[in-house]
Length: 254
Ligand code: NAP
Image (cartoon, rainbow, N blue to C red; front, side):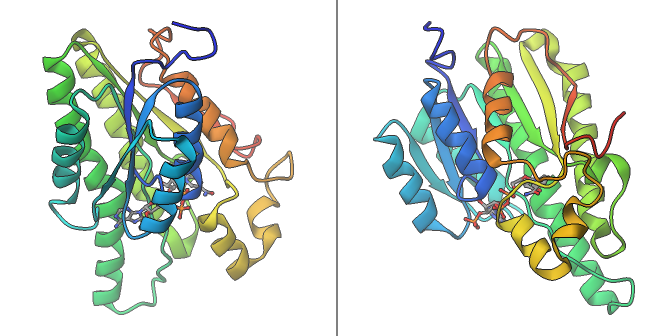
């Protein structure tokens, strides 16, 4: 295995690869020798543009993760297209705002949508991946959590923080339970990262609301997250398991 291509031979399913962080992860994995499986929800154009950039060594799968069977369909399609899958990056996510003054129906719908995409779909995919990994000698899971799940979150986006806290806890349970089967699982917990999700927040609340409490005074770039994820997927990192990797410019220090 080459020093520059430490992920050679690894097929990695990346959800939400049509978004800012997911696309950066796919590009980085590919550069390090992996075969990424690009998942997207609605944005076929961005997913296909990404596939085009990689020059063929990739696959592309659509699935709506807000549907109850979305993650199961994604796993089935990805497995039949790829054969063996060595790792999953649960990166797809949404961040909606809902006030305590909202109507009960809107409040309930917001919580349910957020949990469905950010947590239930990831849990379903973990379940399917764990069965596959156990049968094939192991695998890796990286779950994209958030600083919001660690320190609590804003009044108008409480569901988002709760989904990410749940995802971090799921990651720890997997790490404790399946290590003997050759499975490791970690979470990455970014603060703000410069993507559409962050730009949407800045458009609503202003940049100071995003970076004001970050000691280094800036958001992270998607490439920083991608570099870390690729590192965490290296087979040589045999002992990283269960940890949450904070990437927040010092805005939450544990
Ligand atoms: P983004 O640019 O908005 O991308 C979100 C991705 O999730 C897209 O690929 C989108 O696919 C996919 N997705 C959303 N709803 C979906 C659905 N119902 N079915 C299938 N796919 C769906 O966001 P990002 O900033 O890259 O965020 C990626 C991850 O990092 C998320 O889990 C987010 O919570 C987390 N995170 C982000 C930040 C930040 O500041 N940006 C900070 C901490 C954590 P389509 O567009 O194709 O539908």
